[in-house]
Image 1 (cartoon, helix red, strand yellow):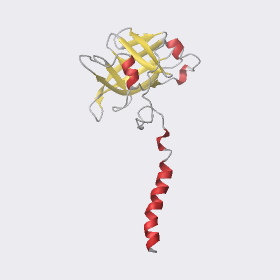
Image 2 (cartoon, helix red, strand yellow; image 1 turned 90 degrees about the horizontal axis):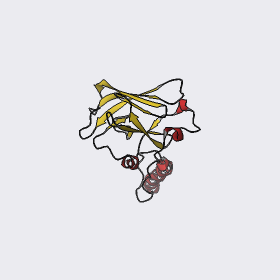
Image 3 (tube, helix red, strand yellow; image 1 turned 45 degrees about the vertical axis):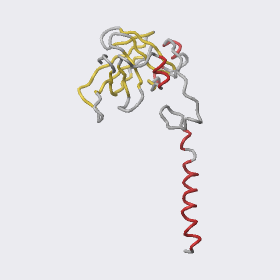
Image 4 (cartoon, rainbow, N blue to C red; image 1 turned 90 degrees about the vertical axis):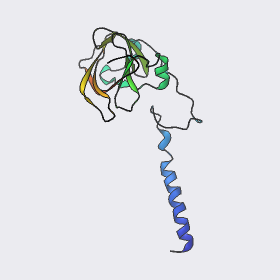
Length: 171
């Protein structure tokens, strides 16, 4: 191999790698690292009733979505509330206060719910039930089940995740 080829090879490999990685930052999913100077801060999802959030959507495919920091601010934060996370490190998918109000994000919209019993929250035919599980995750968070029954659904949807409470809140 000639001396010129030896010098050119690392440069060619670096250029090929940058071309391959060029599309990697196109993921717009919540939590994807993006350059802050290039993208505006995310706006909070609108707070709407369950009927509007699920309008024209097959209830069988509705899944809870993770909330952004803007969403959390729009619903009043997590002080003295608990959150349900799908993973120990993810953004919250359900924010609730035992015996009080709760919020879930469905179809890109924040839906408020009211307590309707111990660990039960309802709004417009949507039912959310939570239950702590006697297990902890790798980061030490308590495991929790969240059962969601959308309006007019034939089946319930179940999710296992993790509960985290802030301030004086308890799951």
